[in-house]
Image (cartoon, rainbow, N blue to C red):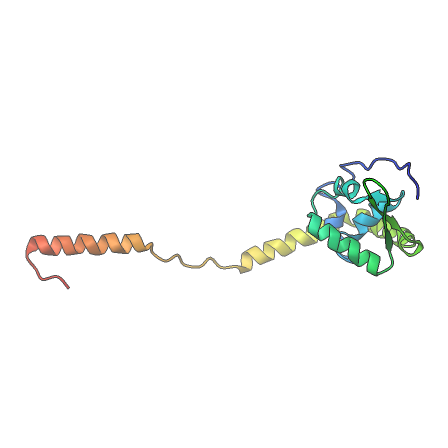
Length: 160
């Protein structure tokens, strides 16, 4: 295991990253980003949390377990004090780097078309959703009824 790894850039995944628009997925939503984080060597869970700060610890754990199950990475539990766990891509996981690079290039090339399609779809969705008529607030009907009852009592008419 390589003990000298470069620190991960906390901003390596821009919030407006093409991964959110990527219609092609490897595994789950986070798998391709985990692969990117591990491409330069093994990392601890806490190191992965820095660039993947938008993913919860639970979901990151689920993604890592699924990747381990699928043979894309290995998890090594350290021995001795601290017993740090490291995650590292397997040869199978490393073999996904080339297709992942091609997908990223495709997304960059078609970025504008992807955004236009998303915005058009969201516009159609907003246009198709009709606002529901609002029901009167129960307090309004209660206040009106009380007011009517008070008016009838003052006029001497029987209450209903």
